[in-house]
Image (cartoon, rainbow, N blue to C red; front, side, top):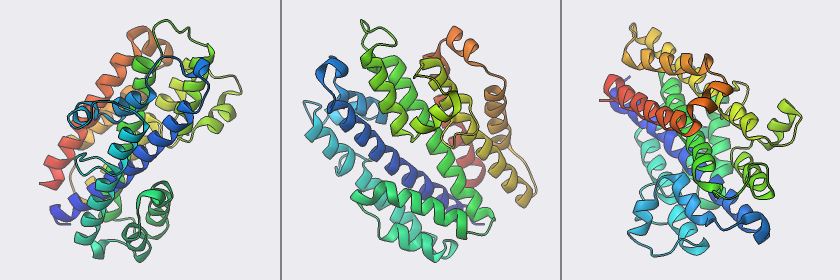
Length: 294
């Protein structure tokens, strides 16, 4: 496969996953701001949404205040925000056009008709049509790399913002504000029901972190994403007849996750662990680009 084709498939999947993540972030923030003040506390949930999306600095270049109107517009429609849902969908469509022959008709129809109010449905349909209709070849494997790399980054950032930013310093863990913020976080990654199925307990921070980081049965967990990244990179390695730095790096991150436990992560510092993971995940993206996409 030509490197430019692989790159287009890789970024097509990343942009679709990013658009869904932003839509989920907006939905979770709307839920949080609809709660009574006693549950919401003093924090600015819309500013937290910007931090989760990693675009706070860019936002304040164009706006003075983070509120529902300005943040929803910036995350959804703004041409000034490179990662807005509008720009993600447009970039996904551009990438899909350049690899039209590598996509199934169902995938092409889904992405070509997508727009803002259909983002989450579009992402699910796009993912489902890829899974159901694509040949298991390098086109499929590169698109899965983009999806799982983006998904891992998004899950890590959501979890990090909760621990490091959202909970006010004076708020006790386990209080009403804490409970509703955790509920919002789990809803944003479609994991609230899964949490109760797995743990059958009230919401507890260390169990939620365990679910989102180490539980391979949750599709959006870091462990699940890296299991898929390793498998798809290995498939590419076999198809192309050689392994490389990307395979080694992905296996290294997966092995660290497999040999981690929540007691050690909390003792070391969850924020520090997640920041290191985000940096490792970004390095994997750079390594994949250098190994296959340039």
